[in-house]
Image (tube, rainbow, N blue to C red; front, side, top):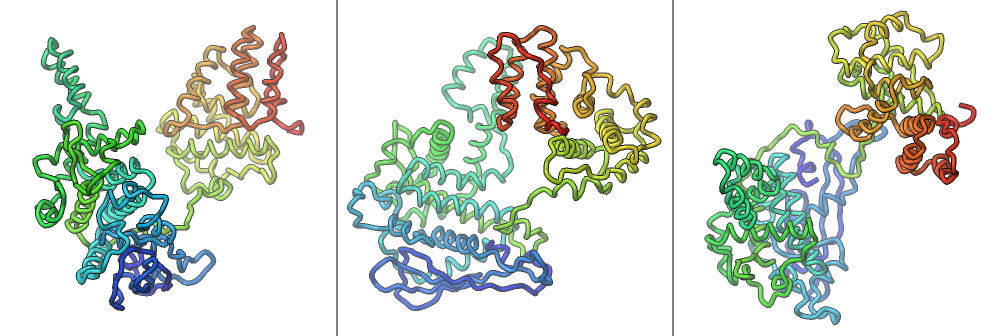
Length: 569
């Protein structure tokens, strides 16, 4: 929201304004009654010498002006905007600042009787959790300039930067109760930016050393060309590429100042020759936690000083202090180096909080021919099958949309130039609507089209299956082919452009297949399919009741429509 309320995406100079005023709870103390002016408002010191520190924020939210009408948004409520400001304030000044007084008190309390000195989050990070952090003369300019640079970024860069900042601040908050998660979050704050960089070309030396030695030994007698192809295939492993990208990105955005002024008051600061090892070790710790819930090394979770590095098992490792300083420096460098623009074309309304975008109900679009093409034919058919299912189930207000405008468009298509898979979807919709809609909706080309493209439906297909399920026709294939179609459907139903029948027709397919096996004498397979149907449609009491009868010695006939549909259907 920080970038949106700046107005850089607005197309006019008119906007709605809403002033949000509230309290930030913080350990930051300013003993001068001087407001801190920032790009979106100002922060006013509002606390005396004792008690929990507070800042009164006055933040102005701007939304581009449009003529008022139902649904017009003039304010988002300000929650996300206020949290953005709190996170940037915490991040850039290395303090604790939230709208939650309990959280701030817990993180900065120095005399908590239930908290042992060695457990206090202050042991992991300097300054951030001190009871009081006294304001410096340069703080206002540091915060203001960073906000201007952050807001000035191109939208893609801003998205990455604000996510990284939020992740960084969340990591500081979690140190008090979950050091393992906190360490991983610090790494992820860098990774959020690194993933937007160009993919590096991994080298064989990037592969895990132990695995690399075993693979090299196994390939010792293989021809060099085959050995190289095996190594290249292994390097395509995503984890290797991600780890390499993380290290390369981090190294690129570490400026010389990180090893100079930034390290002036550090204990065991990060050394340039150790950097690759430190970054690799940090990423491995993050991966161990994310994938196997492995904790950070105990020597890191039991700190005795605020050193930035610590040697564990002979390997230099970043402590929380070192990792936090590294991540903060990289994020700041990224913001400072990335291109800035004053205006940008961006659909900012799509990024507003408190807005949910839901698919339009089918009855409002399925009858409109504008978007109907051979490429969208499967979507139209799938939606129509859902309408058919609702009608068969006698759902309240269920009806079929008049698809005559769609059929008119189909009559005008050159179906001979259409892919057979798409043509099946087109003709299935055409046939089912004409069949179900009644005599007032018959089409002169109906029989002609079915006859001309009859070969499209010769082999088993989901489209031909849909016709059988809706109309009650017998399956036109041998039982083994129907079984293969059932297996193929459930393996591929969520693939792109696959036709999904919907829960009712899926259950009808499975139960009709079960009945076919029962009639062929294979009751064992029939019982398996009934059980599968229960688990594929666990909310259907009729199928669960059918499963309850499986204990009988002889399985009775399975009449799918009697089980699944209301008697009136």
